[in-house]
Length: 164
Image 1 (cartoon, rainbow, N blue to C red):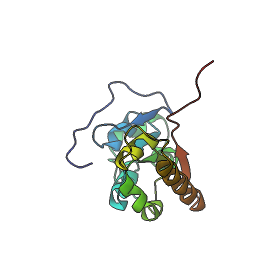
Image 2: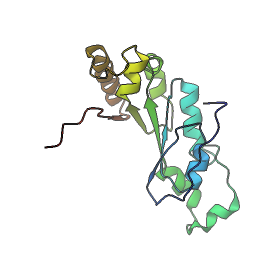
Image 3: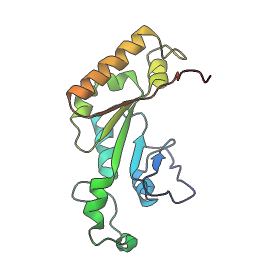
């Protein structure tokens, strides 16, 4: 995550729209565009997960800047409300993240852990084969662990049924 350039959105988001940070990590910038859900790719270590969660929130829960102009959004309780409403979504795309999943789940402030089958398959040596039994078992094990920890699970469906 460090050393990548930010890829900011070119327009203000509609309230509640999801921002996906694809090249680099600047969730504070995405939150300033009014994104309430931030998807953070390639979260592998607890330090990365903690950085993501803190960057999405204002102090004391996080480290977002508290420039006075944000109060203009029409709510005197803007900062605590923003902290409550933002959703930090960590993408589990790497086999190494599976090895760290127990520790990742313990990071305060990550709201959803989303397993990305295609990228996970590639990181496991099965590029283009997310339906490989080894990959599917890893996904099932990850979701089971996430659910058991009572975190928000999610998985992408890379192979939706064909349209008729």
